[in-house]
Image (tube, one colour):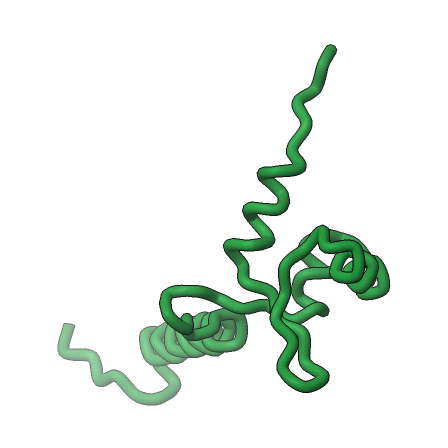
Length: 97
């Protein structure tokens, strides 16, 4: 095993691929995670509509009818993640068959 390892060696290429995968994972984590504020995560209307699979207009109806809690800062609407989970839990209906 006195073989010289150069930049063209298979081990170097494998190590480089591992680093690339690690970097991709870190970038994905950074893009999809948000710091918490007081232990609470806040979501935008786009994020909530995507998670609930409803339109942003439907979310506006939910806000207008008092179905969903929200914060409004200027023109920006934010939802507490725990409020969304609570709303879903409160409106859960068991199957009756």
